[in-house]
Length: 128
Image (cartoon, rainbow, N blue to C red):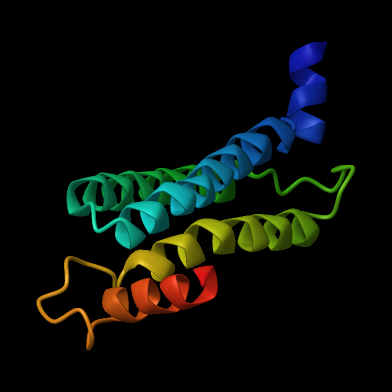
């Protein structure tokens, strides 16, 4: 009987959505360590944080793809499919924008002209 109901209603998308937002949140949390390392000019830590962010963003993309493929198309979903896809899109922007923040920050050759150098300069000015 449970199989019949699962076939009619589909599996719940809540747990995969929670997994996805957990990954996106973990990705965004890495920004604190990344920018602290940049300000401290600790390029090894900055690179490690950048690698973690990129890995988590890719993981979030994999989960997003799995959710989209497995999201039931049945008529009896408690929440409209479009709403779930919209929520997934908003969640995915967290990871995507986190990755976008770090994309141009790398060990600067010329700190005053690099995006990284500009960030360090701004942070130092605000600390005064």
